[in-house]
Image 1: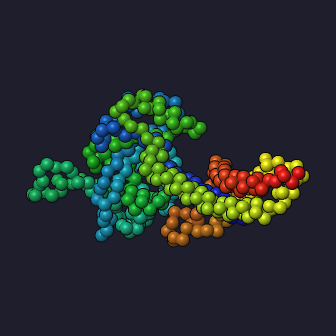
Image 2 (image 1 turned 120 degrees about the vertical axis):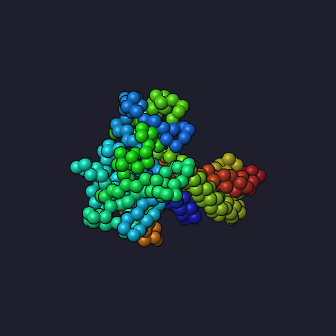
Image 3 (image 1 turned 45 degrees about the horizontal axis):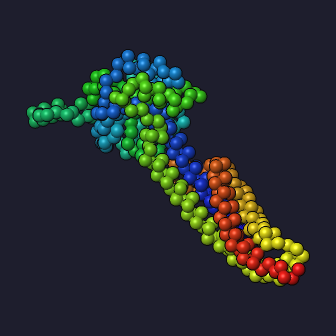
Length: 380
């Protein structure tokens, strides 16, 4: 029973940790990436006009549509420089409240009183040594133009250049923090000379709306020229990898349960041999082979059910304690969260209990049948 209980608890804990990691990734990407993202099926950008925006906004469940221009740029601040991804966003991006809980310094804004502001990732801020209180030095952003013929006489024609004041610093996840700068849409449009072209449209749905239903309605309204991605579909490879890892962890620990059930098999076999005389007495008292078989199957069932129930309770308690007190840390100073995240799901408890019960029942069949062979009707 102890072997079954510990194997069951281990399986519950591991599955809960994978659930916690999946939820953590969803929360991180949900802060940076939109609920729905509209991109062109072909090409890097597409034309956006009032008619297109009106069609999207008219769909039931759409609350905010944010225009986006995203590209690489060279950034310099004082004596430091680096290559970053600039993301131009229309003013209604602030109304999506995706960065509200992730601002480390400054004030969340893209434009205020006619002044443009940049929102930098924490890693970008550290690399460039940006001081938000410095009103004299601007963030210099350079964009290389796609010129067919380079100019050796006037090198400034090779690139576009604009300055902007740093206004805030966000911190979400290392990949984003070290590579992204959020800028006003008009600022990036003029820098890149994009005109009415946009690289994406980001959609925020109304609270309580079904994101999948809204996605399908937008697909029907826009046609095959556009692809609409949910938050999970924007990172489908990562989430698929996480699900595969969870599946293999489940299979590996199920194998551990199978190995542990060998103990049950040999225990029942030894019990059948040890109770050979008792079986003969039972048969002499009128017990048939089916009754003797059921006795040993019941023995295996007791081990399975009591061990499984104890393991589920133990695993649930340990997961609750980890979630409440965070006893097991990530072991990294710069980790996104200090402790391993856990989330218990009812389906994991059901699947774990099902595997353990089925395995232990199967390994009990042969010892029960072997015990029934000791039936001695001639003693009646």
